[in-house]
Image 1 (cartoon, helix red, strand yellow):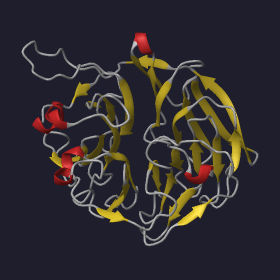
Image 2 (cartoon, one colour; image 1 turned 180 degrees about the vertical axis):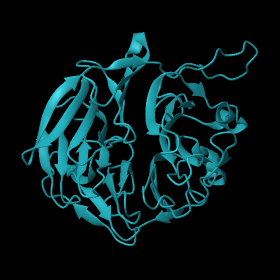
Image 3 (tube, helix red, strand yellow; image 1 turned 90 degrees about the vertical axis):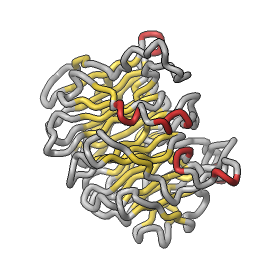
Image 4 (spheres, one colour; image 1 turned 30 degrees about the vertical axis):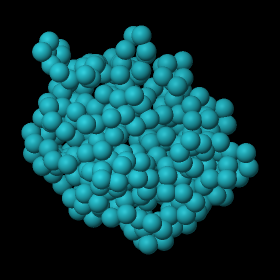
Length: 362
């Protein structure tokens, strides 16, 4: 849908609705509670919200289409760690960092990516979850490390709409991995990425890459975009290999990327200064857009603050609606903007929100 959106923040889940030609904030769910991720399922109209309640742990809720109230459902959980395991990682979910729908041929399937690097799958709309042990047990996981958090995490899950068994995930820091059989087998899929933060002999090591976010186009799913820790990469074959895009203005550092659902050559980014400051370039916020597959970019500023701006856009803080023109962006400083013309101009929705973790339409 193009006229309804959701904003997951440190203080609750905010709704945003377009009525009579104007966008306005609506009811709030989970007021005062940190909502780390929100997912709108276009297959059945359900909405999912992941909460991170600290001492009380990670929780997951679902609101069915037409329902007035939310229902708490099962949250992903690791099996009991074997006593003889040499794995130093604590087998407990610290954070739900990503949620994704399965394909149309799998109406109950939901994927979840977590800290510390676990991928989970539900086949019954979140009523139960299973750890994807084939990825968790991969020996390469022992080399993954935290990027922004103390432990690695899965923040991007791309399901091929042509074949639901074909899934790619992005891991900070563990590169990109792909399965062609629904998760039974996995292989590294970060060929072409490079990590300037590593020693020279490991710059091209696929298993230690830090893709900040990977997103794809619904109608041209082979086309994927990656905002990496030190650059932007593009794939035209669902991650089999990646090509660096060096034409982006302002900065090649950032976290968020959104891709036009009907045109994989069009993508938006939210550049920032790396690495210690993590603010917009020159303290002036801009969104960069390419419409030709990265050959050229336009810096879009109209309606965005151009002085004394210190907003950072998290990985899931930028989203595009199904119409490919309506964009929603929200920041760690609690500012929210919306564009209805592909980013050419922006309107302010709020300057006083809590820090925002993720946004979505639906």
